[in-house]
Image 1 (cartoon, rainbow, N blue to C red):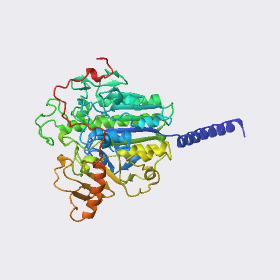
Image 2: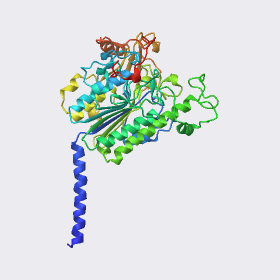
Image 3: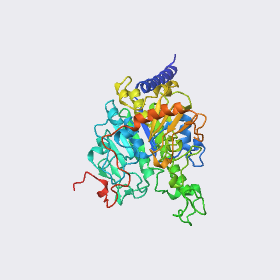
Image 4: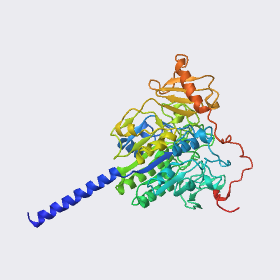
Length: 476
């Protein structure tokens, strides 16, 4: 063999060993974890569910990953976020009926173990929350950096202004413990910071990134360049303040603005996924995407698609979320999993991935669905509590009256979701035994008495004055 041929062989073997070593390392190293949560995005607001809204990056993710067709949440924001980060039903913390509003002194018990705290104990040096927190802002112990996160960039409250980043007249935009005066559209800023974090963390072992967009939650605000994608006419008003929530009308519409907001978020998600590709770490990065609850009917833009109901309701339109998970090194090649699952299962599943056999799983309300994700195994019969007298067991769903007044129910209703996914036919009178069994299960969770409960949304609003720049660490 001459020197040139020998050199070629050495180059080939070196390249082969490098690729093989990288593959072996990825398969034996805990994955990077990126959880992306949209705010008030409806079942019918994504292209892979047939939406008119342009979501090419989420559509691509749905093709590359696994669609979770029966992924459930709470019907409102703060409860879902609490369950996601604790693996426990939010009514254990006094959260169920409403969110934590700006004027509320409330948060989750600091003794509770949050997902980033657990990951910090298992080799995840960098653990960032980028975007919306909404789990307590009135005391230092409720702050994200005091609950396992090593970096926080974003806002404490919900419903901030997308351009000024204000809530209740005060700036609510933060970089760790300090106020941030970064200028720009909040959706863009969140995506840009997520990309920076990925670039900074990629060489320091596995990392955890929780990207919590405030889009497309109200107020309906979009950039002109995104509005133009939906026929925006700059010579006309943005949209009429008197416009009906689903009206098309003449000129610009709420629906148009909503679509622009979703597409902007989708672009940001695309940039996050591209950052993983550019750094060649996508193979061993677990990416989970879902929405915190269903579409807000009052916004005038969101859609539940074929599902019944919307945000605030326990019908599937309020609690069944478009959801995708992608982890090339770890998941089945199946394109869709119909396993009943949801927000409280995320922590237990991650727990089994990074700490197999951990006894911690015994303390969760949720369960690990790892076997369904990796081997496409059907998990045994399970119960999933939706709150307010609503529970699902396998294909059956019961909703009790007198719990959520927005439901306006007079008696128990029962639906068989496999054959009736739009919840049109009440089978309670036909299957009273099933109703009793599910009502008994719901009662078990409905009667949980937390140490404290969040007050009704409007309590304490009158005469409330927001703290300066929502910074509770400034000495008064």
